[in-house]
Image (cartoon, rainbow, N blue to C red; front, side, top):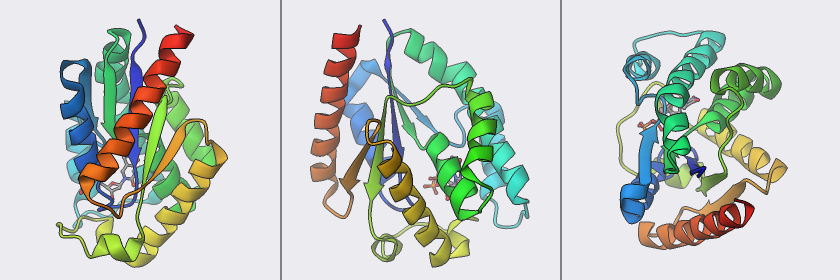
Length: 205
Ligand code: TYD
């Protein structure tokens, strides 16, 4: 039985991490939680480098490092879990690279898609949540700054616009959720969409 691959996307402080955790808790043993970049030994080391404000990285190298971390995660964790019939819940996946590196960093969506399709061997999520919140509202939420957030509002605004365009281009896979609400309300909407996706997957199987 093939599993279900669910990803959460959004700008920094949109609440993805909280929502991914709430979904995993609700699903219990059926769920496998992963986060990007990270989740493997290579991925966690790349994560430290990628987030370090003291490290300067070219946009091209940055895209390749995210793709390398993703390749490890797909091969070691995501594919085996899906093959075992699990629901894999990922806090970010390839759409983060399309939005941050492809669009906001202007590397081009096509090039970034190409290196990622190599990295993931073509694996795409079944369902992707866009946690939509105005960048100015998200910035009011507490949290530590990393290399990306250090860059300030213009990057977050560019990423926000990028996600909106990506979601509009593939409405079959994306579900846009208003994230400027209490987390319990957002979670209820997430659960309904996951339920629908599982029913649809069940009918396909
Ligand atoms: P994230 O784990 O969401 O940060 P935090 O744990 O602080 O919430 O992601 C770290 C940063 O990496 C975030 O600003 C988005 C960025 N990122 C990319 O630019 N491209 C990618 O492919 C991924 C996965 C993340």
